[in-house]
Length: 244
Image (cartoon, rainbow, N blue to C red; front, top):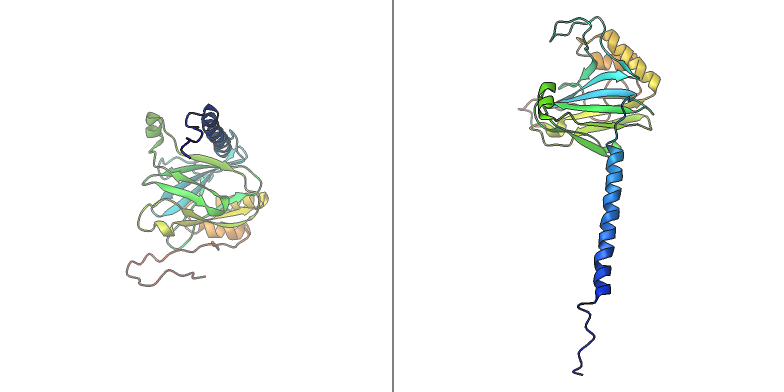
């Protein structure tokens, strides 16, 4: 018939419901986001292990700054920059065209990572950790102090031993896709043995990483097992392959 149906255009109850329920959903999601972000970004003042990750085109360096409250340095060595003996020259390993860098960390201990870059933006990513964070080139400590910015940090506690591939998750240049590393989660005693081996070998041996891994009997062997170096020969026409 020609009778108009019931008009609900200005129904106050429906309008309140349609506004309130989405608002409550957004509020709950926002609250959970804040809680999770605070948990992920939480940093302890005294982590069990403090490591600096240096990213550069196109590889990684790992410096072990502090373990259980004690600096880990090469004793009796001369810092090539300052010329000072026994200056803080931290235990470190670095990747190369022929060797994948391996980051060794202890199981069930808190590990805090300082990210540092001197060239472009990189990103530290271990897929199995379900986490990544950009490595921003904030400059020297003096520049950071002047700008009020500081190197990114994050902290985690590994809960299972094993070898995990790591990658750069930020497009950083020609060999970005091959800028890989490996994380080895090991028993805390094996970790201590590894640092002791690094200290004995010294900072000037380019093969110190593989020698220390072998000397400390780190599970997985002296070389990375989850990824392999790429061929840097620009005239090569074949894909890089695992050479054993």
